[in-house]
Length: 624
Image (tube, rainbow, N blue to C red; front, side, top):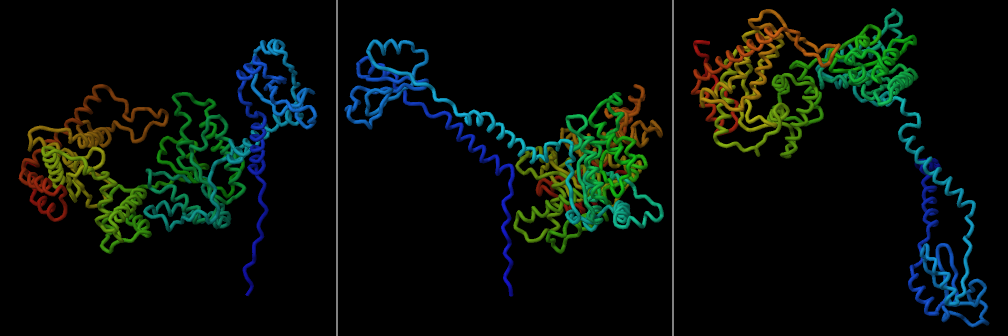
């Protein structure tokens, strides 16, 4: 059997560094050679010897003075000695540095009758002059070329900075995406067009030129775009909208032209523009200055022209993502450009379970882990939150050297993601712990009895995050997309439960209810201005989306001062009724509130059967 074939070593490539680095070394050595070290300074000693009659002969140069002493003279018959100016031979010459402007030296030499001579400066070689002008220029040119090559060439300013992924380099398919089945179904048509374009051409169908993915942050818009490219097996150009915008007007438009030129050369392919709102904001949202020579507007105009100009973009599909669709220019969303808008919404509990199954493939799970139960306990979580949840649980397991991830790790990870890290170093005084315990007990009792409230899973007086001194963890029984009026009022009462417990138990309030009051005020404002659940009637005073014409516009509609006062009065009424209702529940169940607080003071955390048993004894007062 023949051995492995030896590969021939390739010749080293000639690069700018191979040429200009040696030239730079030569230049430094030459510059060092142009400035030899000065001779030792013996000028004062030379003057003393001159006045003492010890000097025999002196040779004066521009940079140094050479002289010989009388004692250093050799016999005349020795012809191999050094001669100075054709005079007698001497054994050695001494040197010193002349003092500029010393005009008394020549009179002194004449006074002591010492022979002296001047040395003509040596002529500078022609190559020395040439090198002094050309070599530095060559070195600087080489450095500039090297830096320009690293940056993409001297004309790279107007070139596109898109990352190009060839076929097979993406590594993401639809199997890696879960929880967004509707969006996947819409995008599968795009994949099918890229694979079987002839099927659509036979019936005269045209695939959408642009697909806009809209959804909150973390829902998987970028992952969906990668999955489309990976599933279709075509080149994928990825760029952020902010990378088009530069200081100089016209650079962004040039980059748009270069990006589409590259994409057309590799068609069929996909161009993905992330954070489209950085590039495609409405052209009328500039404080009344419509038109002008703005860089963002120039870039947007070029993008609009490339997407729906005279030249068709055959085989080039544009995907874009944004979480601010309300600020986009209307010309971007018209048919012929981004003519298909796909909403990527936060997943329901089934979608969250599917996302968790994708993320736990690479981690070892304990058999008791219930992913569906975990999905139900994480309402509002999106794909990025769930990925972070699994990673936090893995870190907790690794911290104690556990081989598998348990359900306790996942529950603790939920609390870390929602509330932050435990702050056990934040030591509360005993009166503060007592107040916090009764505050959280009030939340739990009111929350367990109010309509529309969630199931109370856990109460803790361990500080978490930046300011939370305790928390009550509630989990919804089911996914809810609508709230009835009594349920909204029940949530207001639950938020006011901690404040009501402090008032009933201690007779005075504290600053601990500040965050609850902020959330309750926001909810009451929405009830009055958005949902029409007040005495003001079925009128909405709040816009669902900011104004397209002015990004700084007030989200509320214009209203008179009398109406504004009535809105504030209705908000105050709702909050006062919620606090009164919560206080009535706390008074009726004061013994249970105190029992819950005692358990919290003893154990800091209350959950499970003990919590359910105590809360099961609570009841609404007859007045409710």
